[in-house]
Image (cartoon, rainbow, N blue to C red):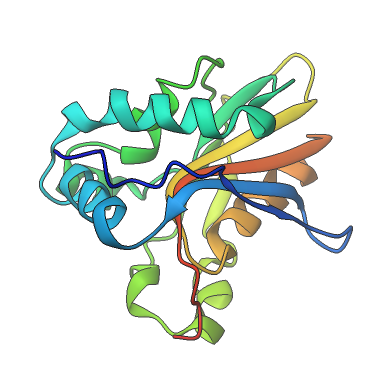
Length: 185
């Protein structure tokens, strides 16, 4: 895998106002070119050996988002999708960020893939798709960073953040490997 063409610029950063459950989000690079190839190889070709290098890149470029975090929470896949894929790519990436990983969420609704939906349907698609994992406990629900491979409109991250906030997490941030920069779909 050729990593040299992945952008060396600072992470793509977004801050949200108080109307959002997410405080801020960052992504290593735009979801195109080499980064898109890397994520596809990880996710669909099951090249899990990519996770350590991509996770290290996320740790480096997302240092500001990870700073002060109590834990990172991978965005969960529905059990059926995880079984089909054989793993959760967000969890694999989270393991390489240098912050404790906590599986605080579960995906309770099997939804169509977000990538196939137009922008206006994505928030509706993931509404109520996530729930607090009843076996989860964090001693001090301070700062939690959601981890995923790609952010498109942010609907999945916002849906997860809403669940975390309802369960007492003070601040929710997000870190992804890539971000779709044109969400007009």
